[in-house]
Length: 307
Length: 249
Ligand SMILES: Cc1cc2nc3c(=O)[nH]c(=O)nc-3n(C[C@H](O)[C@H](O)[C@H](O)COP(=O)(O)OP(=O)(O)OC[C@H]3O[C@@H](n4cnc5c(N)ncnc54)[C@H](O)[C@@H]3O)c2cc1C
Image (cartoon, rainbow over all chains, first blue to last red):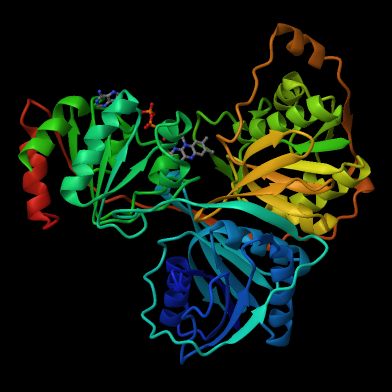
C-alpha cells in the first residue's frame, strides 16, 4: 500500500493532525509521501524517513481546487493508492475534490483503520462512542478522513529538506480579504492537560466568570457545548463535539453539560472525566469517572476558593 | 438568478440513529435536517435581494415528504426529489454525483448546502459537487452581507476571512451563521401547492460507484464504573482530592 498524507502546517511546523496520521502509518510499518499545505515561509516539515512536498498557497486566495490538481498529479506520479487527511476545513475540502478526480468515495470521521490484503478496514465511532462501525473499502484508491486525536503523534526530527511548489491560481480561484486571526492566549483546547467545559447548566452567560477563574487556577483551556456556542456565550472555536473540536486531555471537567452523544464524541476519550450536573440521570454521568450531582453555581465558586 | 439548495430528510434527531444492515433506519416520516435550515436561509436572503428562484434538491427515501414540505414552508419555490433503491446507503460520492446532475438540470447558478448532514455527517458533499460542476467552492460560510455585492465570511482554522460571492459557485453554510426563519401559518398553507417534481434515476448519469462494504457494528463495552456523589455542600473537597490523586494539581 503506497500512502500519501495530506498535511497542514501550524506555527512553522507540521500540524498535530498531520503528525497523528504519520504516527499511525509508522506504527503500521507503512512508508508514506507527505504533501503539506500552508502559507508560511520555509516551515520545518521534511524528515529523513519520508519524501515531503510543500504546496505553498497565498493566504489572500482561496485556491484549494488548484492544490487538489497538484496533489492529484503527485498521486499519479507516485502510484499512490491510500490517501489520508485530517478532518480539518482544508483536509475535508481537498479530500472532497480528490474523491471526484479518483472516482472513489472517501470514508469520513475515521477513528482507526487496519489493512486486510488489498482492502482497508476503517472504524467509525457511533452512538457517542458506544459502538464502532466497520467498513471495508474496496476501490483501488482509498481516501480516509481521520478524526483528530485518533492516534498518537509521530515523533519525527523535522528539517527543511523538501520540494516546494508555489500554487498557481486557476479559473476557480477566489480572492480573500479581511483575514482575521483569532487571538489565542493561554492554554489551548488542542493540547492543554486540563479542559473545563461549560454547558447550559451554567445558567447565564455572566456565570462563565467562574469557569474563567477556575481555568486560571488550574491552567486549563476552556470549551463549551454547541448549545452555549449557539447562544453566543462562546466563540465557535471553543465548541467541543461532533461539529466542533475533539479533545483528549488528562482531565475534563464538564460543568452543567447534559452529555448528548454529539458532545461526547468530542471528549469521551479524555483520561479522567469529572461532571457536575444537578440532574442525577444526565447521560454525562455514564462516562464520568467522578460525578457530582449538584448545582454548578454552588460547587464551582467553592472549588475556586479552596484550590 | 437560480439557486439550488440541497436539503436532506433525516429521522427525528431527538432519537438516537439506528442501523439496519449498516444503513441508517429511515421511518416513513422524516424531518428536515436542521443543518440545512441555515443553507435555506441564505438562499432565501439572496432570493429577496436578487429576485432569485429557490429550488430545493433532495435525495433519499421520500416517505411522507414532511421534511421537503418544511423546506418549502420556509420559502423555497419548488423541489426536485429523487428516491431509488440503488441509492439506499449511497456513499458521499454517489450522493454528490446525483445532486450535481440535478443542479445542472435545474440550471442553478448557485448551489447551497449545510456543512454536513446530522445523520451521516460525511462533510464532503458540497466540495464534491463543486468539483463535479467545476465551480468555485466557498465552504464553511458563517456570515453573509448582501449589498450590491454579496460578501461571505468563511470560518478558517485560525479565524475567518471574507470573499465576494462569485456569480456561479457552491457554498456550504455552518450552523449559527444565520438565523433560520420560522414559517407562519400562511407559509405552511402556501407550501402545499408548491410543485414537487420526482426525478427518475434514468435521467442521471451515475459514474460514482459503491466502494464501501459494511462489515459490522460492534458495541464497545464501556468498562467505566465511575463514582457518583450527591453534593451536600462539600463536594469541592472530593474534586480537589481526586485532582491531587491523579496528579493533575
Ligand atoms: C448534528 C448535530 C451536531 C451537534 N454537534 C454538537 C457539538 O459539536 N457539540 C455539542 O456540545 N453539541 C452538539 N450538538 C448538540 C447536542 O445534541 C446538545 O443539544 C448539546 O450538547 C447540549 O448542550 P448542553 O449540555 O449545554 O445543554 P442541555 O442539554 O440543555 O443540558 C444542560 C444541562 O445542565 C444541567 N443543569 C441546568 N442547570 C444546572 C445547574 N444550576 N447546575 C448543574 N447543572 C445544571 C441540566 O440538568 C442539563 O443536564 C449537536 C447536535 C446535532 C443534532
